[in-house]
Length: 236
Picture 1 (tube, one colour):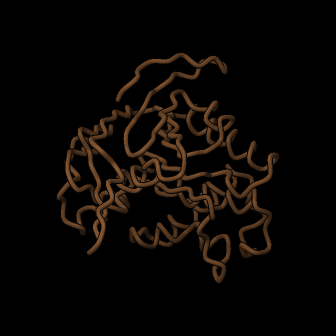
Picture 2 (spheres, one colour):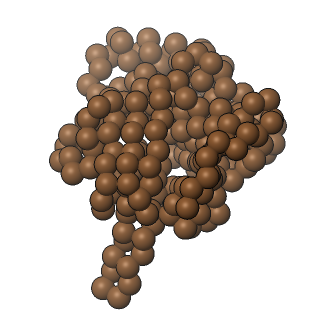
């Protein structure tokens, strides 16, 4: 599904050049649940943003569903992003002025889905995630866990090929955080492909594989089997 080869990202200003990613190579297959860990500044969020087509690589190759993304025109990137990728953010990124219903519906409007189909999709996903009784509420009327469920609903509404989660439990207490991780586990069990950036070893243990990054490179990968970590590769 995703193949990354020798991917690099350099941020340049007039005075300084910073290499955020250095020749990163990675493969994510359909149905994988992969975590990316590492200290601040390791490049994990930059990598996630490039995979999510929110940022562009400086060099290397990134293919999504056999289509090369590096160098692709912005309008084609936008189309690929809307069609294939759902985002879950640490800060939820809900629009306070819109109801829960309207927040979930928004991606369908962008994709010009008919009103009748939009209504059915929103009601169906809200029922699955247990937030049907909150559709008329506004984000500030919800708990953190409920807001993240709304964010998950919005991420899933277009049936994306891959879900990208950036610290999905970062702003939640342990109870709500655990509920979100169980939800992601259920989504994975139903066939979703998930790539998650996290600082939490506990959250990473829910995934099949954990990638450790530092200074813009992948240091190692390990498989997670019932909380027993098996070192698979070590690079650099």
